[in-house]
Image (cartoon, rainbow, N blue to C red; front, side, top):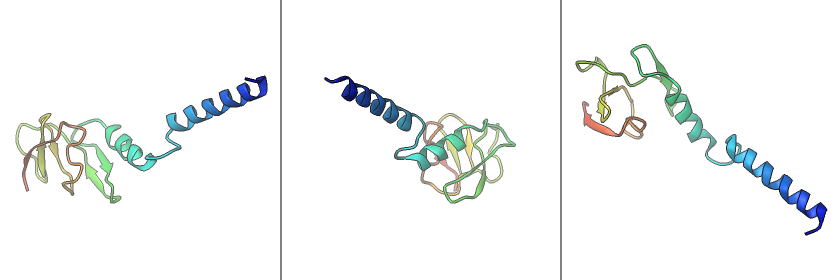
Length: 99
């Protein structure tokens, strides 16, 4: 391979690695939603923005069913999701639907 072609191939490969690493290619929105949800700690005072742009309380642990909970996740947290799609997706799935 000629030096010019080799350098061009290396630069192109590095560029592709960077684009995929930083989410500039494909699936950016779904990855952003997951990061937004997952970046919050699981506690009573945390919230996330769902796929519809609504602010929703993050899943949390509780000894009894908290007001407004819609499901209990397999990791024991209670979800306040406003849609069944994706509920408890970062918590092992839904154990029990409450509504």
